[in-house]
Image (cartoon, rainbow, N blue to C red; front, side):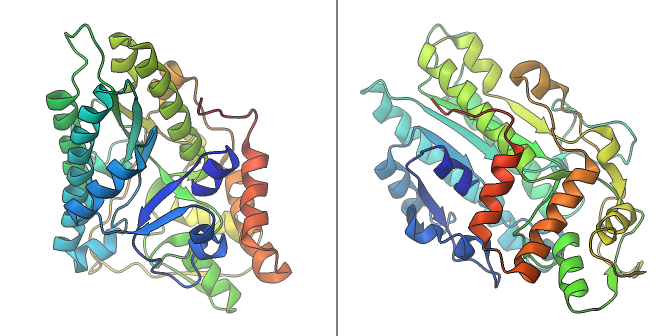
Amino acid sequence: MSEWLLMLGARMVGIALPPDTDPALFDQLGLAERLEHHIVDIRDRQALKTRVLEAQPDFIFHLAAQPLVRRSYAEPVETWDANVMGTIHLLDALRELDQRYAQSDKTCASVFITTDKCYENREWLYGYRESDPLGGYDPYSASKAAAELAIAAYRRSFFPVESVTTAPRIGIASARAGNVIGGGDWAPDRIVPDCIRHLNGGDSVPVRNPAATRPWQHVLEPLGGYLQLAARQRQALESQDPAAVQATCAAYNFGPELTANQPVSALVEQLLQHWPGRWTDQSDCSDPHEAGLLNLAWDKAYQQLGWRPRWDFATTVERTVGWYRRQIADQVDALTLVQGDIAGYQGHQISLS
């Protein structure tokens, strides 16, 4: 996302914790030297608010989180603290930003990223819609559902667009993506990085939940959706049209085509077509609970934004595995690979203006 924004000509202010993997895409892209980078814990309310008010942003993309299901079982309090209170701290900073922007006619579009796991998972076949009940079995999923509730409450309480004649200066949307994969992810307990690590070492890939079905999509798919949503929201805020603002200040799903809803075993088999190896079923009934079936409906994003996925399941896996193989075997630098993926994905230039 940072690289794509830089390619679009944005002046970026980034807030994050230090990277916690080695290697880390943040370091591989040299982002600390290419944007205004601040080490800030979003659980630190005052420090976060100070940076937001200093930046006076036109756009905010909130992706900071504890994002791993299995880690949330080991660190439930930290997961809730980061995912819920961290989000609330940013929402509260926007309240003060709104007061300042009211004096200057500035606007700010914001997109808060949660997850497809924020829905109360009934293990049913059809896709979840933005109006379906929120919930979560595990600490990660439940914390993201709670974050969605906080986002909606702040939007209605402090940035209302219903039954008003003047739209707010701050827009707030939430976005829920499917299971994203793509080159540059080195996190533990994620299926693609785990596959790459084992295959590169010549080992069999252990697969915990081969029958679990997920909506697999390349990371650039939802990122493109977030950009389109933010751009449309900013246009609505500038026009001060309450109806247009209301349409873009809402929850949106960004998922893949139905054919990309595949079991984990199918993902691994597809991956092995591009990096030969083997995998073994490591299912263990004593492992922490993870959802077995999950699917997203994204027709709202299509109808409201004209967004739809561009890469099918086979292309998504091929591009992902190709990224790692080119970096590991051919020593191609990450910046070249990321910019190449973005250029290959874009059917047209996305503009934030």
